[in-house]
Amino acid sequence: MAQVVLNNVKKIYDNGFEAVKGVSFTVPDGGFCVLVGPSGCGKSTLLRMVAGLERISSGDIHIGERKVNEIEPMDRDIAMVFQNYALYPHMSVYDNMAYGLRNRRTAESDIAGRVKEAARILELSDDMLKRKPRQLSGGQRQRVAMGRAIVRQPAAFLFDEPLSNLDAKLRVQMRGEIKQLQQRLGTTSIYVTHDQLEAMTLADVLVVLNGGAIEQIGAPLEIYRKPASTFVAAFIGSPAMNVLKGRGEGGTLGIGEARLALSHPVSGEVLVGLRAEDLQPLSGPAPGSLPVKLRYVEELGAHRLMHGEIGGQPLVVSLGMEHAIGDEMWFGVDPGAIHLFDAVTRSRLPG
Ligand code: ATP
Picture (cartoon, helix red, strand yellow):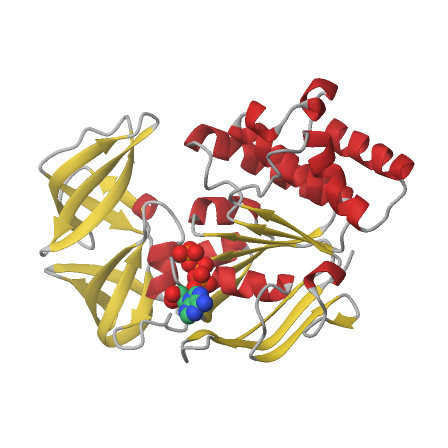
């Protein structure tokens, strides 16, 4: 096992496009790092550079003590799990799992022991080991792909959107399995996804990417609670954080006609971040509350989302099932739950 360190890593493709713009971060030994961001932000390019499948234009990557920039993928001591499983259709599940070890001339007796142990951990029966990949379900195939990574006992696992081909229910189940497996094996992991919920639930270290650069890095809850920019605020969390135009007037904040109390004075145009669950319904109009006009409601079973507007700006509020929803409602906000961002740079304001 090993820590993985990226130091000012850049990728410029042959057509001159800079897909990764000087990215640095460290995944501690045994840590689970998730790279998350919208399509095209450069997460797969970064992962492929760690794997050695893509050349690094500048910067360094270390896996353990070794700088791996010039080391072949095969010799980097990593195992990769892909979205499409990348299993050999003509080989049995057993042979698929054994393949990488045979390539490295591992003794058959050792291979048998490792495949058996991986199959036990992943609950793949002896009968399944004899089947061809096409005779397995999508979830079972993904488990075989993981088995193939486990038997290698690598310094690091690299996951490239491994759950994207599974249905929603199976994704949640496999997400839990991957998390438990990684905790049990303690293998340093880097995992790429565009799904913020998957990212939140799996990561110890969350790296939010935007346009080839790191927007924010930290523990998932830290990022959720203190997004560094409106981009992160809108990307991490479901529903997305509300971001409204507002105006600081010393100790109060104007949003349309409403005035909210602030814990720190600000002045001038700002962007105001409010999480849907931080808005508290009041029984009627009150000073320091937000009046919200109803547009429509989404019933989610355990709770409901009220989609409304304030001064022409959309706002989503999360409400318990016990709250009746009216055409106009008033909400209170704890000053500590108000996030403020610079109106121009869209970065979080201090305080
Ligand atoms: P997705 O979630 O859609 O896979 P991603 O965040 O993984 O997106 P990358 O695949 O890393 O994004 O691509 C980053 C950017 O680099 C994109 O704008 C993409 O079009 C560009 N890109 C990828 N491969 C090449 C290439 N071989 N030549 C030129 N540009 C490329």
